[in-house]
Image (cartoon, rainbow, N blue to C red; front, top):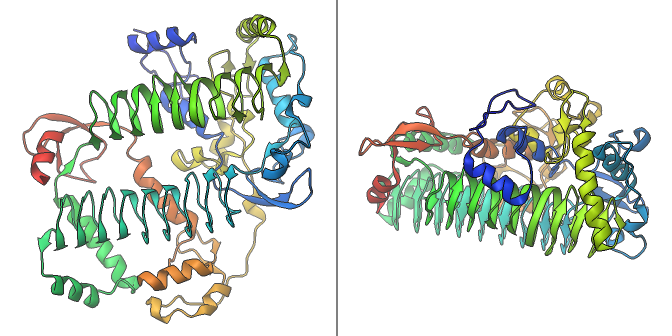
Length: 566
């Protein structure tokens, strides 16, 4: 079977017979980048949390945008144009007016870049939201701040990928939560704090993979338990007494309990990978799925490979952050009845047969287009009759192969590859790629990525303020303070609803800036994107696990684990 060398990292990667069948079915060539470099490349086109205040280029009102006003990588060394949400979806302009003829004297990606540089971009992906201007990739939020990639949230801040939550702060992948803080991969939880993989829990602290529990602290692998501390039963009175004597309102106490809990988790058996109602699949955090290979955070997904953060996806490869799609390939983000989307940054609302496009809404049979709505048979934003479109598309694909785009590092991009790194509208340090695959400025530039130096010119006068250990000693004037992050040394501030939340749940205010807190949570996800051979600590069978022996010394196969926690 083929064992090509990646154009980027030079490592060899396998192409299995099933992969070749998939590529043949959707009529694309085999990739020339390895799976990890393909993921990094897609993520380099997704900026979620680097936001800027700048004028809308149409109505001139100030708007929050994901496109930096100071990154000179647009046409003629100028920033990209941005339109606010209202202007972008108004009839004051028409993306088709930016359409142009295809030029067979230049590579396709060079022409795609010219269109990208000229056409206005939407400032943020933020729709139907109320009083939530600093959110991105969000829908139907109310009173939210610095939420990213979620929907239907209210009075929430600093969350990533949370859905239908209220009064929740600093969570990663949380569903149907209320009054939750610093959790990862939890669902249907109320007043749950510093926990991972918890489901249907209340009053839960520092716990791992617990279900249907309440009043537990420092626990692992419990099912339907109440009043437990480090997996030992206690009376209701003793549980409350423990909380009183080890008040979580004290930053010092909180750090100590967190340390003790994480050390206790290491003494308990953990499932090698998280699979729920899933068959014939590899990867981690897969629910109600089948025939998934090397998939991560997938639900109701079938016959797919190398996908991440998907729901109701079928027969797809190399797809991330997509809900309800099939036959997708090298696709970064989208939702709602999508089919045959390839080499595309964003597409929504029943789009189909979309290739090399960005932010298409309800479109069909489009190639190399930007920001179109309810259009068909378009190439570089120019409309064609069906027969002419199909003929021209075939000629362009041939042209992409005979005149490939070569980037500044000598990598060739023919038909079948996602957009070149250097055509990203963002600096590498602004994107999700930097969060999962960190690089220094010099490393990023050496690999052909862009970089935004916006941080180098930011200077703050920090407040002469010592954060009290206990939340009860924090006064309202903390809202006027410029605090210094203990980890990064960067400035951060508290917002009023955040301080009110800490007081309500009795937790100390954080000593780290929001982005550092996010990085810490994300690290749990990022370091678990590879499988390694382990031995089941119960039956001795060989298993594939995302956990190293240093992180969790004891792992069980799925069968043994379910018997253990039943």
